[in-house]
Length: 267
Ligand code: SAM
View 1 (cartoon, rainbow, N blue to C red):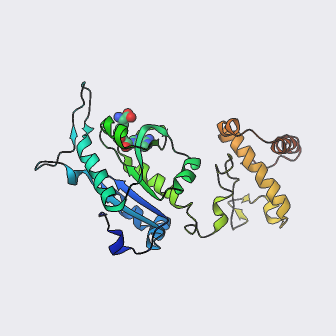
View 2 (spheres, rainbow, N blue to C red):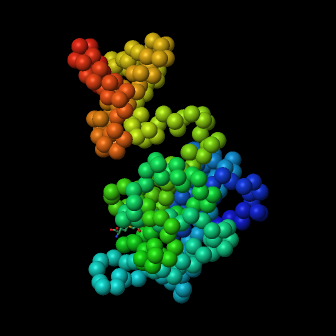
View 3 (cartoon, rainbow, N blue to C red):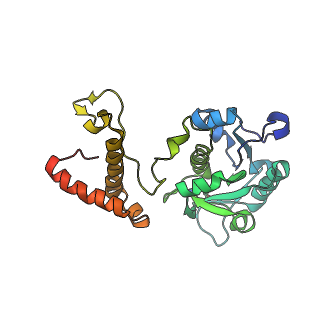
């Protein structure tokens, strides 16, 4: 189970990103923080994560953290006291963080925001549960309120793992290859082109010939086009927000003609 760590005692090297989780269910992060990319980043001391549980600050024998909503209605609301105390205790120990409250009613988290957050030295993710957290936590503590999508989760923990992974992989040195985030989906307001690997034929489906040609210039143009086509088909909203350049428009209209003639593979 994750426990607040004393940085000076355990990790002498300053991490590139210090993440502070405020959660009633720290055990939900255990395998996530030990596995794959994020696990490695923590092992290599590029990222440091500590978790503080509001329940540890709840009064009484039962350490009750929730209560019924004023004005009536279903479900229970996280009381502000234990959450505020958890935030303050974590910051007293490790310093002020950029505090992000997780809520479906927040602004939408995306790749641009991930890039913005990677610039923060300390990032706090405050996870709600039940019907949410007393609004005074947002008013008094939150620097930002973020949602990971237009759906409702049972708690903020899964949303926090999404943000931690999206942000951590942008820290230099976390991904093996420095360029691997450059061509990716959303980086330039486009979805990434489709990718293939060996074998060249799988269940009678072949890898597009151009990718086997060894002609890097042709491959680059083909990928750009596929990226545009895929964005147009699956995420036209991205093209509205990031309209195609003249170059891209030419590429797209050129293709539609070629496509009719040669019937290029669909993505
Ligand atoms: N009653 C709230 C509403 O309708 O907006 C939903 C509360 S939800 C069941 C409990 C907690 O899960 C929230 O306080 C928040 O921390 C987290 N959560 C749920 N969906 C989320 C989302 N899409 N993005 C970020 N956090 C989310």
